[in-house]
Image (cartoon, rainbow, N blue to C red; front, side, top):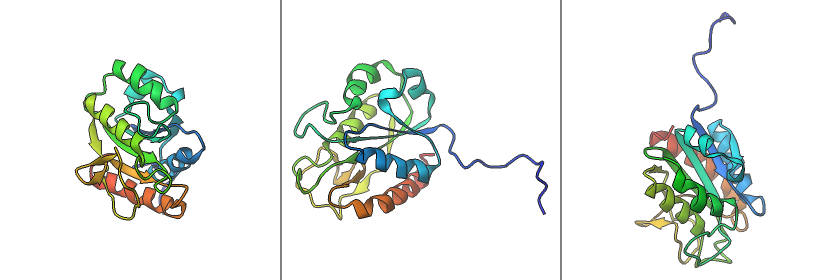
Length: 184
């Protein structure tokens, strides 16, 4: 028996965290949903976020698709492109915890697999964020990616075109990895 009038000692949501994404086809939103559910936190399209809102969070999970393959910047073809180059430079992000996820088609675009994830990683890291969540490249069939750092991917990479059956489990496992790394 537990009295019902006692305050809860825990919360199901991890306060101070959010999943930001932007999408063209809905695939990035699907993965954002898996992550949001696994973490127990909200998700929001980055195009709807304000500067004050973004800087209010301690931990941000950020994700984008790759559309402009081979590009040096603005690789996602989504609201991230404007945010990264027009908004992010104005926000003090020093010390924020950031984990990146990306979407791509490793079969059709194996030379540029999830390049936009690498762009997110580089620009948030340059703002003084502490980066989390690097993952193995094993199990993927790609030639090259701007999302690789020292032989690992800079975060969770998913392919809803060719490996959609792996995405939900990869998302759950990645959230568990982030927890062990002290992201939350």
